[in-house]
Image (cartoon, rainbow, N blue to C red; front, side):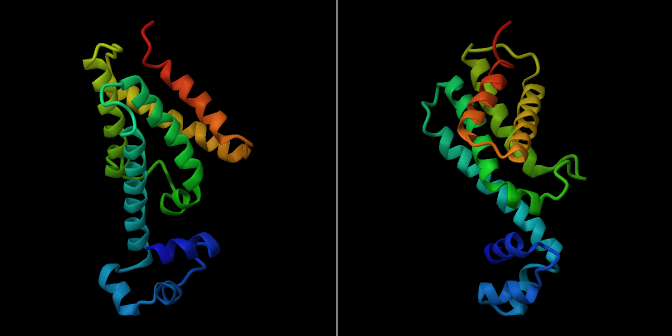
Length: 178
């Protein structure tokens, strides 16, 4: 998958052949077909890997926060979502050519939402904020962060960190008491 990602980023998915992938990976073509029936199946596996890596990076960032500091954990989740997505959007766009997904139950997206919702639930249980609909709040933050990050990618701003702080600030207002 690493070899395929490198080639897809350099040449594009359509222009990359399975022969080129196995050559770069230094494996036999039969090895490729042992794991993947097609390039599309490879892309599907790459999508799952991408999301798992994204989740793991978010989890590592969150784990630097105190276990009961729900405000900081939420801040860290949002801020790092922006930065990681900006850093990895080219791979994201390859493996999720239609990020609205045909499968509305999308388990990869739901894993990110579950991670965010757990932070929101922790803050609710700690009495930090009151949310009537934590799942809807998680959806709003997740999709807001995704859309806002698409904007910063399109604008090619000079400071991703400043933008990430601004997005975080706006999203945090969603959980503050009125």
